[in-house]
Amino acid sequence: MPSMENGSSDVSRAEEIKLQANEAFKAHKYGQAIDLYARAIELNAQNAVYWANRAFAHTKLEEYGSAIQDATKAIEVDPKYSKGYYRRGAAYLAMGKFKEALKDFQQVKKICPNDPDATKKLKECEKAVMKLKFEEAIAVPESERHSVADSIDYHSIGMSHSSPSMPTQVALAAVAVAFVAALVMMVGAAATKVAAVVVVVVVVLGTWWWGGSTEVEPQYSGAKIEGDVVTLDFVKKMMDDFKNQKCLHKRYAFQIVLQTREMLQSQPSLVDINVPDGSHFTVCGDVHGQFYDLINIFELNGLPSEENPYLFNGDFVDRGSFSVEVILTLFAFKCMCPSAIYLARGNHESKSMNKIYGFEGEVRSKLSETFVELFAEVFCCLPLAHVINEKVFVVHGGLFSVDGVKLSDIRAIDRFCEPPEEGLMCELLWSDPQPFPGRGPSKRGVGLSFGADVTRKFLQDNNLDLVVRSHEVKDEGYEIEHDGKLITVFSAPNYCDQMGNKGAFICFEAPDLKPNIVTFSAMPHPDVKPMAYANNFLRMFQ
Image (cartoon, rainbow, N blue to C red):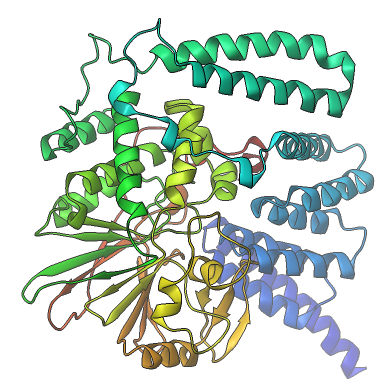
């Protein structure tokens, strides 16, 4: 009899804790919600709702690997619980695994055949999978791809509507033929007539655009680059224009991106930074398209210059809806003075992330399709890590699944590619610290988690003092872990307009390089919501 009473008491107590967790979730305190759901699960692990709710909280923190694990457990507990499949499908979607997501949403529809929301999401997922298949069908093999950047000469761009180049016309025609072929393969010859009309429109409009839409019109009153030199006056004018939601002319955007690519190509995968005694150096974390917070960093800490250098540690774009403004500003400072600003690759400087989380759509809207490919190429040129004065190792994500990795191994990485799903490059971009020793699976589903002992050994092996990384939102904008040997810095306050976190940056002064951490709050921005340009399907789950 007492055991039955205890069981009933545990179930009741678990429900009370679940309600507390729900309130924490509503207040956007997702970490607290996860802890409370975990307590409820300890008391009653046979309630699928607790597992699915914790999966949802993990999704909010971008811990998609943990979300999939919890949602799978909810399904095991109750195979007819539709929200288990729903939460797992949403997590797969956020990872870009559309085919896996489709299977889960098909199951949701099967369980809830009359649910209009389930029907809508299933249709959107089917569209996403069809689009993926189409892109795979027309994709050019890697060995046959030609650089978009190499085909652009910004000096001669936009001279006249009447002089498009023959190579561009030929290229457009080739794309059009591939388009027709893919349609015929996918839906049969009946689509050929429609495709032919589309082809004509693509070729005519595409040729016109390339030949003339980058001409600098007389009425253009925005920032202008005189000749080849990007000046401070130009960058200031451009930032002011951006603050007032004005666009930079494509001709100058091409110049900035192409000049930046040329500089980044010449850098090694691991960049050594020398800060002279008495000088200072600032490291910023994720900015994620929050342009008005980037401007605030410069107002608090000064503009980048040779005397006031910065390192921006990846994830410049996605989620925030001013990513084009952020990336052009950072690239423009790099063009103005290469030693004023250093740029590292984050996991969001990749095609797969940009396709889902908004940058690709934003670039298409504000610039053009050509820039989508151009940015993808330039992101592959970004260095993977930096070392300050041979003492501070700075990387976007974290450390490795094996011991013994030396700085020379990082320098030797061939980074000019999309990030792989495993290996050193993947781990540099994706891994996270954990509070306990050793290594564990990644809560994100990519990379791994590593403990203080892993950090300590890496520092000892490479005669370093400190690891600085980003990649994770923190309530105070930063967190010091692993016995003071690892600092996470995150520079996007009130992330996605909902997390309520502060932003932070770290100032180091040579020779001691003691970290001085500065925190700041979010700035108001125009009424354009985060993820405004993101994948339509993903926005349905925000």
